[in-house]
Image 1 (cartoon, rainbow, N blue to C red):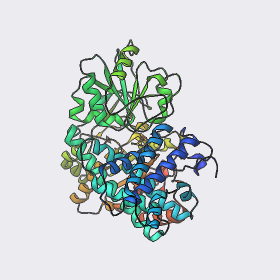
Image 2 (cartoon, rainbow, N blue to C red; image 1 turned 90 degrees about the vertical axis):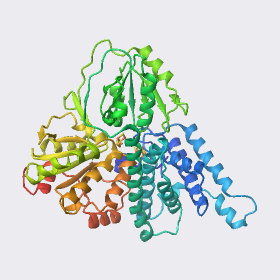
Image 3 (cartoon, helix red, strand yellow; image 1 turned 180 degrees about the vertical axis):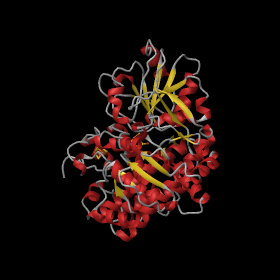
Image 4 (cartoon, protein in one colour; image 1 turned 45 degrees about the vertical axis):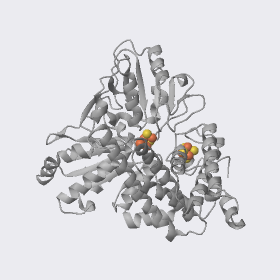
Length: 533
Ligand code: SF4
Ligand code: SF3
């Protein structure tokens, strides 16, 4: 093994694993510290077995897992602090005076490097479990910040981590746990959906301009709506506008966020373009969660982080959530002097969001009518993460080539490949409907279940196909949720995960008909049953 080993994301080196340095910018020392942190979390979860977990342990597990998601935490000190915290908490669980062997068991730390060298299929299933719970931790963290109880989700996280650290488990033990991971993620997304909609209202369809007005402004990125709300409160009346970036775009649909007049529009596209897009930005950027790329020197002094996201030498706004420094930076930089007309990747100048389950199901009669009348022939869910690989153009081409009597539901940052396209309407509904962030996969599930009920058929019998793109571990947890729900024939790209072994893949193909994307033409022809659409 080289300097490090990480194969948790879609852009892993050579489609196999980052061994010298991370393609994402993660250096070997950070990779090793993250492995050590994960080992400490596994040991903590094992030591907690059969005990009443404390809220401090719950939070440490969530924060520790979240910190190891791709493009979240590049700061050795912050990672070390989390590891020390996990070790101290475990220490408290192993009181003096226990029988020798038991105490020794509790003091042992799990070495993640051992996971990378066990038999291929066990490694594959344990990786699915580990990356799945990393994804879940992010959603549970966001819900918890809004004051919602995620206890059932946390209970699963303990169980999964303990299983990863248990050398005696075989394929038959791990496969059901992998499916249970999908169930726990469904619960996490459901609680987060409730937390978001109860706190910020039910999203409504909203057209979002891509232009930036003259004057000071702040760009806010990531998934944390709570941080956006606090920033909007703090910028009130300060003459500073706020623009969303990346996964923050769906915020425009929420009544309790869109009511702030300084929330003006969206800046930029998906995460992989940030180093270009921020280069000459006359404004600060606040990162609330992933995906942060190592900032270029030319703009690093304008990037701020908060919550679990960390990068050495960037100003981090801690629990105070006092964004004064960000606001001052915006005033100092002054913004653009003239109106900037920006465009999406296809040249469009507005995007639409807010089609979460509330908005779509409010129009359910219209949708069902359109399907019955033959106006809507097929639904595609084209969603997931974006990324830098040229092969991701597939998703733009796929959407462009979908016939006019089909609807495209979308979510997460992969939508930036096509969300500025004007594909027209069907029966008063736009053909492209943005349901929100990656966690709003929950909305897509709700809509699919409502349609299957309305048509008296199973979800797999609906004229619906999922065409997914993945990059980081939240997408892994969502994929497991869809498998847990028994969704068949998912198309996945741009490449299959390096951590899925041939035997595990065979299982997924046999039981779920999961397949890699091919070309838009071929896939559309196969789905719609007509050659050369
Ligand atoms: Fe490589 Fe992805 Fe891991 Fe980064 S997160 S080190 S790119 S596999
Ligand atoms: Fe995007 Fe990171 Fe995955 Fe929430 S912001 S979807 S990649």
